[in-house]
Amino acid sequence: MPALFPRWSNSALWGALILGVAGLAVLLLAPMIWVRTPYDTHRLHPLDQPVLFDHRHHVLDDGIDCLYCHYTAAVSRTASVPPTELCMNCHGQIWPDSPLLEPLRRSWFTGRPIPWRRVHRLPDFVYFSHAPHVNAGVGCSSCHGQVETMALVFAESPMQMGWCLDCHRNPVPHLRPLDRITDVNWRPPPDQAVQGLLLQRELRVAPPTNCTGCHR
Image (cartoon, rainbow, N blue to C red):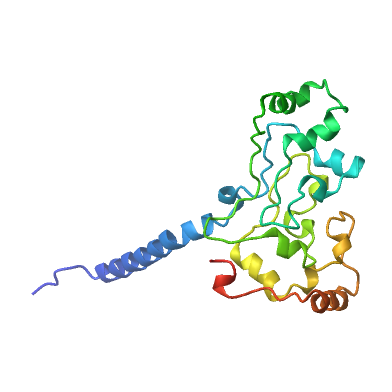
């Protein structure tokens, strides 16, 4: 009695099975990889803002400290965006008639806040507070990058769980003196391993690495 299937059908079956398993693996892994890429997280993508605000000019030229505008970073969960009143402290006298500042003046006279676009956005299921980080020796640039060099601000760090845990498990390389938190010129010294360890002990830095530390 002749065989029902030709001999090459065995090879075809194995090939189909291998392709099917590989296709299923790609189907499962592709979305997990995609959501970690800058294309989905919008990392490294400069954002246009309603007011043309250049950090290079305000920080490098004028020497404005980060905490002047983002004044709640050391005391609360959020770093806050500067309200119109804060901007008008300077621009009520500096460039008061500049066309570039028309959205600012409109906000001032109407009482409507400027609709700034959020650069860094964490999922709702992630708890994060700026204050414990700022008061534990973690500088602004450790997470936000060298903002003073950006014409338009963009998210430089991935802000993903593995990235956060790397720092929580070993914060020593990232710690700096509290009086240098906003110093854009600060760089880790050659003996950062020693200095960071001393700061960790002095400030009692013990970041949580358990799930409930960030997922509350």
